[in-house]
Amino acid sequence: MKISNSLLFLLFAGFFLQGAAPGANAQTGDPLTPPSPVESVEHIRLNPGSLPAVNLTGEMLYKLLVAEFAAQRGEVGVATDLFYELARTTSDPRLAKRAFQYAMVSRNFPKANRAAQLWALIAPNDPEAVASSLAMSASSGETEGLADALWERIDKAQDKDVAIGQAAAIVSKLNDRSAAYDILRSALKEPVQDLPVTWLALADTAWAAGDPGRALADAERAQELDPSSEPAAQRILEYGLKVDPDEAIASAQQYLKRHPQADDLGLLLVRRLTEAGRVDQALKQVQAMRETAPENFDLLYTEAEVNARSERYEQAKALLEEYIAVQMQRRESIEDKASNAIADASDARLMLVRIAERQGNLSEAIKQLSLVDDPSLVFQAQIHKAVLFGRMGQLDEARKVIDSIAAQNDQERTVVALTLASIYRDAGRTDLAVETLEKADQALPDTPEIKYDLGMLYERQGNYDAFEQMMRRIIELSPDDANAYNSLGYTFVEQNRRLDEAQALLEEALQLEPENPYILDSVGWYFYRTGDYDSALQYLRRSFEIMPEAEVAAHLGEVLWVMGRKDEARDVWRQGKEKDANNETLVETMKRLGAE
Image 1 (cartoon, rainbow, N blue to C red):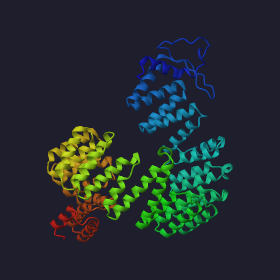
Image 2: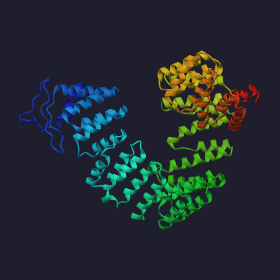
Image 3: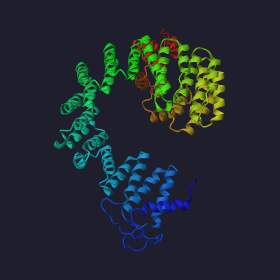
Image 4: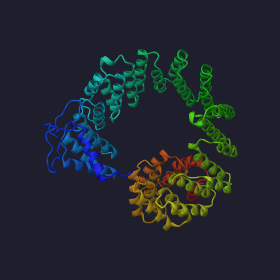
């Protein structure tokens, strides 16, 4: 039910009065009487480990109400300032914490740092307050005294493992990762250097600092202190792979011989062996784990995954069918809500779908998708089925699948519309794609994703006014949508008109997403159009480094060609043709320049 303003007033009054003795004035012991609205707050008594005793004033309560309402309206900056002011006035750590939290929500890190320091000052024995204060100091680069402060927390902590983990998390906020390692190393003084967790924390920090050798040495020190430590063995494998892969793998295998039940390490070893192309070793490891734990049917799935990644599809399919049969037996004996059998079976079917697609058997992929019955995956499976029917050219079947989907919310309705439109577009039925999205745009008028795809279809049809209208509306709805700025700016560049406006649009897009390869390509093409070939080359090379696709190759090659660097241009075009030999832009560019 809705809460009345008068009730809110009483609730917020209670927020403060919890800190005072019930029924008594915090200072005199007299019966509590409502203060005058203009009365200033009396002196606050701070009792170690307890909340402050405060005489509530009307002004304080008014500010608290304004802060809460501001937060509810999304005005977190106002809420942050008011909670911070109230925390300073009352020395109430709960208010300082609220100021810190709202500052973090708004990503105003200077204010978050200020609030965290106040929170820790008010509540020096609150581990969360102190940890937040130290973390914010670290993130702002304030490292002086940080090692001593961390050691003081660790030394006082009852649970050393937790305190060391928190210290590692705090130094991870530092931008200088090497300095983070040195600070943590200084903080972990001799009394805790015989704890394996100390060296695990140092290993992780060294790894984050880009020093795998140091990380490996620290992980090995942790294992010396506790030879049975599986976390240490995992790190020796993970970090050792960057130092000496053969030695790291051998170390993991030796550990598993001593501790055959170490499934986490075993699975990590299987993944890393598979990634390294050592498929036979990976399969041998899985089979050894299955012998040790024959009741662990999840290893069937793992073995199937290894076979699928190495393109041993028939073996993978046989293992997945066996795994699905096990899950079906589980479903017969246990209710679905009491086990994860339905989810596990659906995951296996999705892997069968991927295998079928790789083998070009889209009908089999559709069959498997029809068998997926995990409620959390049914929507995804239906969308995938429609796309596969579209790829097979069966547009009527694709439409039937789409029409059968009972979308539960606007997000799903958006996905349905975009999927159907893309099926029509890929089939060359731009008219039906436009019709689909125009209907969706009427039903969901403030959805940028629908407007963007519809605008791009208008552009494909040559309806540039409608295209521009859509992009302008997206920018109104979502001013941070870099794609809308980029698409509109690129279209102006491609048409070689309104170049000043194109420049402003592309500058905005680049500011929003400076490493977006599509935007870099557009900016490079703008400079080419305006005759600044050196700048064009700079941006197009960067785009091609990130995304070596055919269309970027067409643009980069053309710039090189007109600069007289024809051999370099041919090399770039050759790379583009390897990606997509039939790309229209690439084919047209080479033909126009006589470079076929």
